[in-house]
Length: 90
Image 1: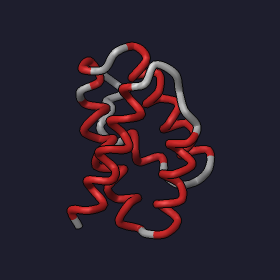
Image 2: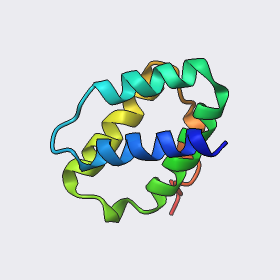
Image 3: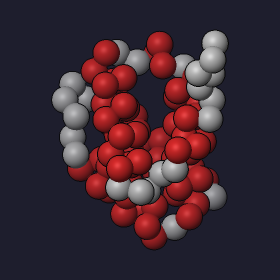
Image 4: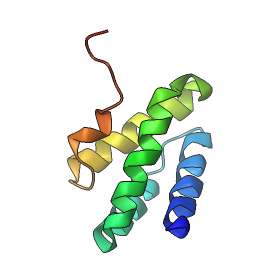
């Protein structure tokens, strides 16, 4: 529903606006994903949109986003299909 999208949006906006990476964000996101499949789907859609528009972030925001994705993949909360919008051949 809309509530899970709003939670994901706020969490990710906070993550990408901070100067340093905060490990609290992937921990919280992981807990949300464990409790509801809808959060996994919401994170996938949010990350797909953000990967397409990476130039809107500062260097710190891009680094934080990359570290977040790395942490979520390593912990098994998100799958490799998070990279679906990336054209690796082009």
